[in-house]
Length: 541
Image (cartoon, rainbow, N blue to C red; front, side, top):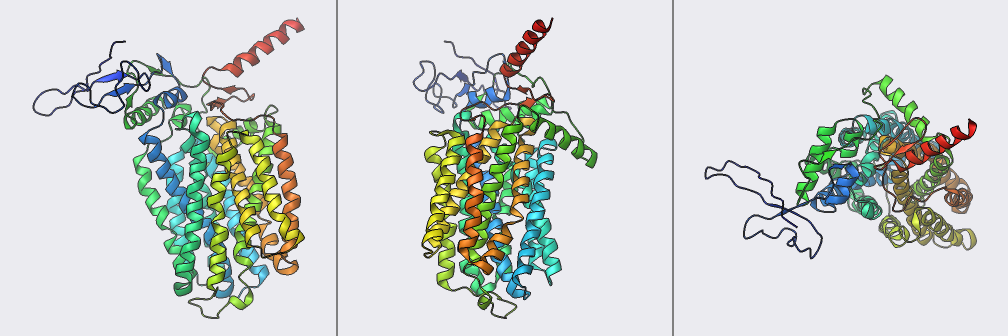
């Protein structure tokens, strides 16, 4: 096989430098040296990605394969996710601290918590639309900057009204990062999507565990307000790192921005030591999602269009069951998040000192940190089963694990630390797997919207979390709170079993038309549906 050379000119004063490019035949290929090895003593050779004369985004991602670009993107998105995880954990310390700071009752503390969930609920829906209309990266940048501003505003709160408003808007901006998973997976080869999504979950666990450790170090000496400021550090780093990566090529091509999509893919290929053939043409999906303007009217039109595609008759069953799993997983996880601190923070924990209103013992902080480490364990549980059992049965198995962790509290009422650890780990795993399932089950033009709907529905359901994690806990005890979770968990396990498809190993689709017909690279489903329509018409005649 003859080497293909492309001339790449660079003015250096001495003449013209030619960069040699060779086809890539895989490890040990006859015409291909080791990746990155010099060609005949010259500059490193770049492999030509085999995409054919015409290629889709998915072809380029698969042909170029894994490399430094995906590693950088994982670092960028992972830093952002770590900041979000730290912010979520922050609430578990803000609420008891504010309760002492402003002398709140249990009921007032629960209402303060609800404001965050209202913000997340509204934000999840709105940012999901923005992610599909304005782009994945820009929505993450704007939301992250907004989160920094509003968290700092919360530290200046002189009264409960100011703090409530700050937490409401903070919840709204925090939801803007929900497109991070779609952004990452759209540049990830199919064989690595599950593992990369779980790696992103590991970043979340680092954020939640790290914030619990910081609370132990900072709160006893400086209070909850100082903890809020320090928690913004990952967000600030994430904003800077986001400048290093391009917009999602899948988003760009669906929006009809073919040249920009090609530039993004070329950038990915260069970072991975490859090149896309210059004469190969990037093809757009048969149906574009349209460039609706980012306005209230545009958001409304996009939401109606996306809802009709997501809940059309061919996807209705799957969408309803997936959304229910989002609710159950989110409710159980968030309940564990709040309960972790609430079981240790009682009225006697308040010091009366405005500077440091909440006092927790070293043992309290240690047990809180132990339970927070469940997020780290929760990242590795799906790694063992997500590809072996598939997405669907992995969720069912994880729900069973959560139920097993609840039994000791219901039967023997021991020290709750171990049980809370297990429940939180399994609930975190469920959220990871359902996030992967959602990203794989829906096409590019509504993928961010589907993820946004998952977070929105989960947040709506989680509005009742303060009632269970704070109200029921303080009034009836931990057994009553766990009993509520058992009943909810049973419905989640049933929903997992009822899912109509398993997305394991399936290629990502680009678009879906108003009739629910999905468009992938080869349009296999469209061809099959057209064939069926043709047969039906012939029979009718």
